[in-house]
Length: 88
Image (cartoon, rainbow, N blue to C red; front, side, top):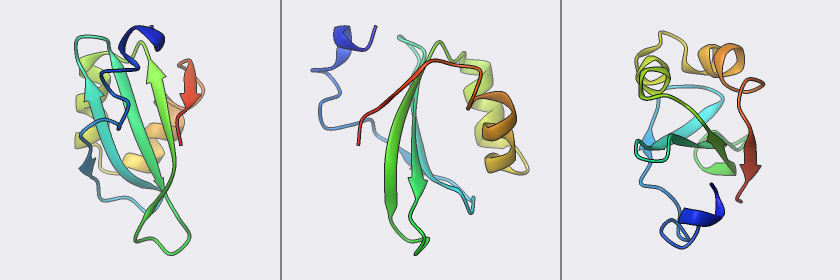
């Protein structure tokens, strides 16, 4: 799945900043059900590593965005539940 749209997202997803001490920003491709997550650097201002998670439903993406604690939701419901690839 990642190869099929690698060219489309060569420069990355359009991500929205989130309010989290762990996550910097999140993007989502509904058609391919791929979630892109940028984590915060220790300085908390800039993104560090960026990962793409496959098979993430639109509902799970919505729940992440609306979670009281996005970092906790990500760690509990996404991190170890979906296949991923590091893109940066």
